[in-house]
Image (cartoon, rainbow, N blue to C red; front, side, top):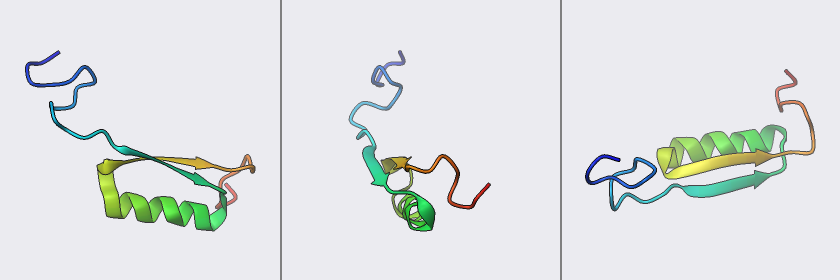
Length: 59
């Protein structure tokens, strides 16, 4: 562990990212994730929960 860093490698005093869960897939869920990533960047950890095993784009 480097001096001045926490056990997970973040600088001391650095905030952990907010953990955001978007429940519900589809295009709206994907768009929500993309918008949050663009707005909040690395300040958030994103998870998409969907009942569908495929991606919202159908691929």
